[in-house]
Length: 189
Image 1 (cartoon, rainbow, N blue to C red):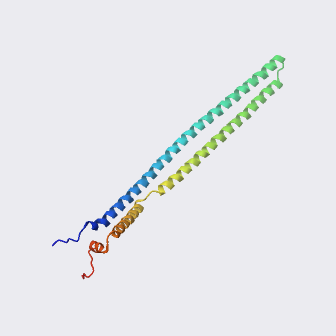
Image 2: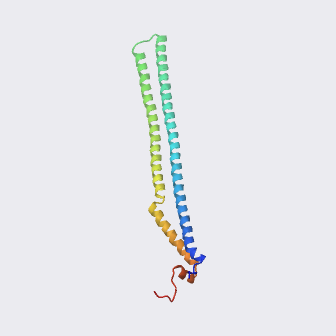
Image 3: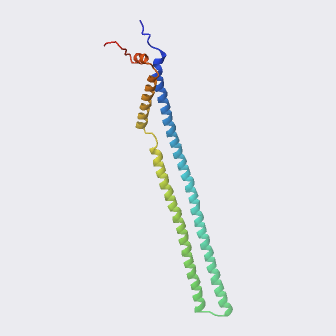
């Protein structure tokens, strides 16, 4: 005669185990996918920031070039004025030559100051760039470490399975539990 002690309540531990495993695996997948999406967003944000800094460096180079051109034109105008003034007054020689040399010396000093200001601005942008790269690297490390490793996911899954199984057993009364484990009081081996 067939064992008629099987009933649908015997499946409760198995069903709760499967449900617990499924939920845990879905959570792990969801968390890892969110981390991967966040990494992608961080990289895209970094690329955008790098592009902005590249544009700022190009603008800085143009501004330095424009200032140097403007200062060079001013030096030529100054020289032209000095030579025109010398021609009007009829003076020539050392005084005019010294004045022209002085104007070019001042131009050289001004050009050096303009270059130094440009270099200082570029250094500031490069430092900001390095800081952002280091920040991205730190954020990436943190995000990657928050992902579930296969071993961690396996342990979490086993824990969910055990919890689900125990929860399912909790739904069974004592006689159903004895039937599930094929044990009963009064039976001797």
